[in-house]
Length: 607
Picture: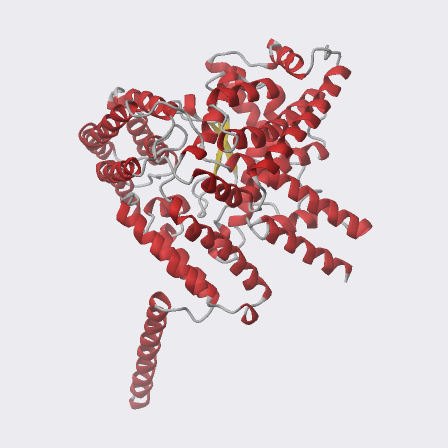
């Protein structure tokens, strides 16, 4: 017995030493330079995530271990929070640079280069921190909040529903923080384009004039509670609390934003690009560098766009001529004539829209059955299709993707905009499916998030040129996979690539060549054959996020160049499945680092 007691005492002492030592190690890692770069990555990512309860709710990495307090909170959008974040990034950047390259493994060195690119951009862009429009027609706080509550906040229990109500009650503070930032932008002479003011006012007026019980916030909560099977009395209680929160907190918060934009309406008269902002030309060049991860100039990108527009239009005209269309009058007349054919559209009805969603689902199932010859790695996450929420579909793009939760509790979502039936021609649906779902965004992002051997930050970060470039490459790959046998489906693919080439022209046109909104709309309408509603939504999107529209074609071009290089260098030893694995399993990265990765793979095969 005495021996046992002694062993227990020794064991207890050792355990205490381990706990204290572990605590000191964790404290050192949290407050000082971590002993290795991977601990630094983990610490920095954790600090960022803990400051963003909405990110945590989206990722759902803490829920499996029982941590859920963040689900009752919203992100802090105050100027002070922004100041803290900038200082945090500058401090982290300095620590990152202190790790010597020679001390790092090959994989850690790649991670460092990616982190340097990402953090360096944040630090360099500090002076343009307020060159943004947090309330806008595309993804502003006023439409992002209800979308987040409807699509991201999960309800599986009474406490989850109570968290939902808590978030409704937190909107007042959040929107006041946004107003603080808007007023600061005014002081700096930074105003949104006039169309932004008009459209967000229309959207917010419609939102607050909808009775609470009919609005998306209440409807979503009721549906979530019903699906979760919560007790009826609890559902009724929570519904009353939610309606009170909407009427006394949410709608008044929107009312304060509305008042601000009504006053702003008298101060804003024009629709100008980035050039009109303080140091706007420098801002746009930086935006292009961040979005494309290249040093391409606006002039170069504009010229490439014009050249690619001519090439792709020629290919489309060749197909149309083969199919018996009159192409004598040129591209615009021919593509518009084709687009006017009723046979390419669904009925403008609820049944027609339901059929569109069903057909998108069937297309996903079709491509998923054909992946094996082309890909070694298939993601576990599933993807579903739904329509863009009706309250915001008028100003939303034709489609977008929302990633799956990392705990598997929420699938990836491909959202299709069904506002204008003429914006969904049948010949464009397959290509849109391959871009947004499989093997495009859902495929690439899900594979990235499932790479457990990567530092966590690399499983999350998006570099637009990589992610959008891959999705556009996926459209072209679909043709190789035999998924576009109908010539009109191939026209849809070419029209989608043409759309991205036109983006090179109009984005640089707006922000560098100083085109007006109307000039950009006219150019896109004449050179794509897209529905007018889609054209307007797209052009107005480019005003809000300068440079992003150029990332698609630039990224796709680089991936195709690297594939051609690998095919040439490896000959019979080239394996398309291995190439795709090399591109996808490293996660999103700058294009120059992707090129280094592919070249290393080529060298390893040739060795």
